Image 1 (cartoon, rainbow, N blue to C red):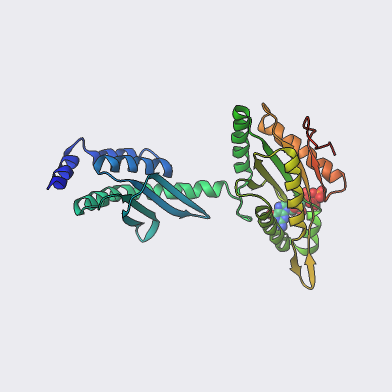
Image 2 (cartoon, protein in one colour):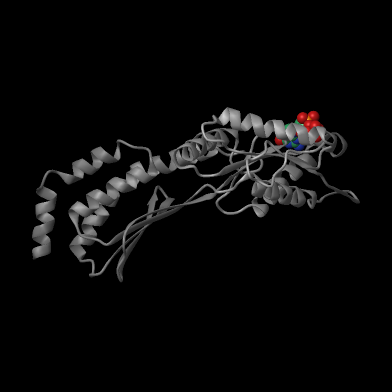
Length: 298
Ligand SMILES: Nc1nc2c(ncn2[C@@H]2O[C@H](COP(=O)(O)OP(=O)(O)OP(=O)(O)O)[C@@H](O)[C@H]2O)c(=O)[nH]1
């Protein structure tokens, strides 16, 4: 009875349904949308935790707010037969029938904006992803460098950039064809993933050029990672008839200097890469001497 009264009071007060309709239509950000839903749901009934999960393209998206409890209700969110993720609510006390009705009603309002936000996230992801290697592209790198420069400028966090370029890749295409060249590029992306840590970011910067951003890393450690990456790339073997095609890579390493713009940082890494190419390829060069560091100009 008390619950029914609470529900009646809620549905009659300040038109929260219209509020959710209105607020949900103001954003295409999945995170913001779920935040709005979590807020409006909390104004309707008490819950401990809301968790939303969805596989978006090649990434897992998870939104979670609050802390859980032993009672839960789960919803698989679909519209016109298409899955738009799973939403779970948890709390310490049992969910009552009337409350489930409220949740389902609000989910009914959420589903169309949720579909739009999921589709927008997929388009955004595609715009930042290289289609061949499925790793982030140059546009994503530009955004990451702006963000990392600003973090370093504010908090003095170490970021190191590695530019890694395959050697004589034109010969690979000319001798074995573009399909083999494409296989090597995909295998290189995989080798980069395997040679780096979870928190590191890898990008396809250009045709046969890759960029790796290492947070909390100085140029000495960046040099080690670059050599590990090059060792991984040199292990790649792509069969061509009775032949195994292999490649080597050259690398340039530059740690961000406070106050330096993304373009200046990138130019120093590029200059180090240029020196690696001129130094005979299949080697790494570091952009500058860091005071008090064991890294020497090479
Ligand atoms: N298969 C394939 N090749 C690509 C792709 N993008 C760029 N390339 C090729 O990469 C080659 C790059 O050649 P260059 O810039 O001359 O460099 P390089 O031959 O690697 O020589 P160095 O970098 O000086 O060692 C060109 O042949 C491009 O066609 C791609 O997506 N797939």
